[in-house]
Image 1 (tube, rainbow, N blue to C red):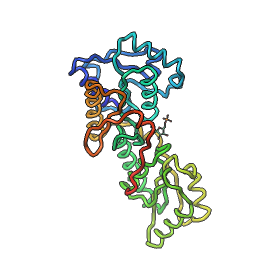
Image 2 (cartoon, rainbow, N blue to C red; image 1 turned 90 degrees about the horizontal axis):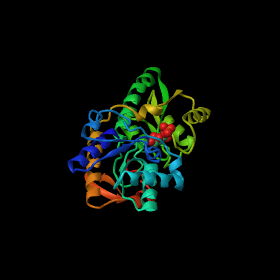
Image 3 (cartoon, rainbow, N blue to C red; image 1 turned 90 degrees about the vertical axis):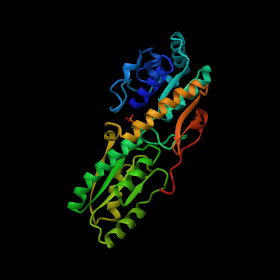
Image 4 (cartoon, rainbow, N blue to C red; image 1 turned 135 degrees about the vertical axis):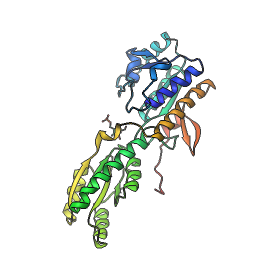
Length: 299
Ligand code: F6P
């Protein structure tokens, strides 16, 4: 997100547009908590994870009266547009705000879950994936040495993209994702087959939002029908949301920041920027909110 913020600010100044940054997302607009972002204010942030503006899941913004307050603060500043960097919740907020006040808003998709319609990849996904795969590589050392089965839980409340890609990249034998109904018997069958083929250790990647339950429950339920492995559970948790962004995320975020400014300059507000098949695209925020990004069935 820092790379996107830097790109927005630098691109804006290139076009002689002034910027302010609100702290903690919508909550900062409601509380009028902002700072002026000049060219130098975004120096040395490209390489750091998280966001220097901080973030929050604002409950207040869900209420119209607080949005009125936010709108008044933007008006007092004589703001002409709002750029929102965030996931589905943030884009939904921007869409509501844009419609309620007829105020130009532009979205930049940032979510490690890669669950936002209108872009092949959202900011943070590649970096989180790399962290997951490096972690599984390390876990595999124990799995292999002790002949164990490891369940590794990754993030993804409603979506299995992190699990899907990381399972391919780490050579996992099974993946459990929210998009596909999972049965313990299918996993047992797969593990039995592995054993029959002389497999001595296994990795199963579990998306947190799967239909069966927690990673511990899956391990426990499996042990009732298949106990040929000693099994262990690792929940990667917020490890996945931090760390220096990968090159691909820095480039993606930098392109999207520029694209957001260009869109506003050509009067294309109330859209979200995205990159599909390598090309910059704009998708109406209405579509982003209403349509669902589906997983790639081929994967
Ligand atoms: O960014 C989305 C997400 O990573 C989900 O996959 C995960 O469930 C959630 O965030 C965790 O959010 P929080 O840090 O607010 O608990």
